[in-house]
Amino acid sequence: MTDVTEESRENPGADAAGAADDDLLLEQQLCFALTVASRSVVGAYKPVLDKLGLTHPQYLVMLSLWESSPRSVRDISEALAQEPATISPLLRRLETAGFITRQRMAGNERTLAVGLTARGAALRQQATEVPVAMMARLGLTREQVGQLHASMMDLIAATRAAAEGTPRR
Image 1 (cartoon, rainbow, N blue to C red):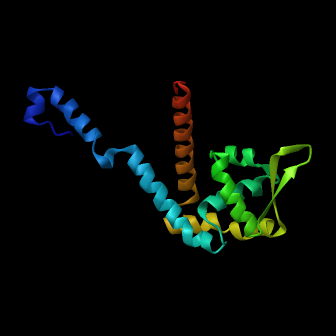
Image 2 (image 1 turned 180 degrees about the horizontal axis):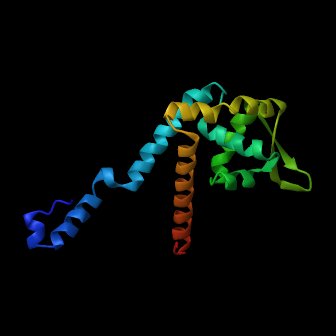
Image 3 (image 1 turned 90 degrees about the vertical axis):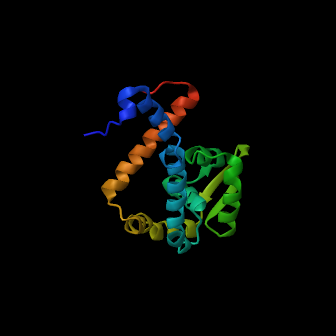
């Protein structure tokens, strides 16, 4: 049963005004919750990824390369929804660490092919422990992770549609 105040009975618009005021509370902001959740989750990955010698952004690059290698810088940047200029410094550090190689593609000198070294490919076996470790650290089941992932992918699709001016169904 909802609480109906005297003011709202006398002025039905008061509920709408109160809801509008509540909409501006920091704790009600989707952007705030997503920002804090993102920082918190990435922070929780740090000790797990430290054991692999990777930062979180480097881990994402390696995940893309474990799926398919070699890949162009453009392909990696599209897979990670990042600009190539953001990816390039990560690639340099991963190359210095001995996990990847960067070479010009034969027949297309403008395209840089990024491939795994033997060391980078071998790191994948250690990385198989990361999802399980993260579920344990966050106290989430595989099903809960799947639900959160699906919700985030829906949100990503909605923001892309909004940016393109395409209404969502």
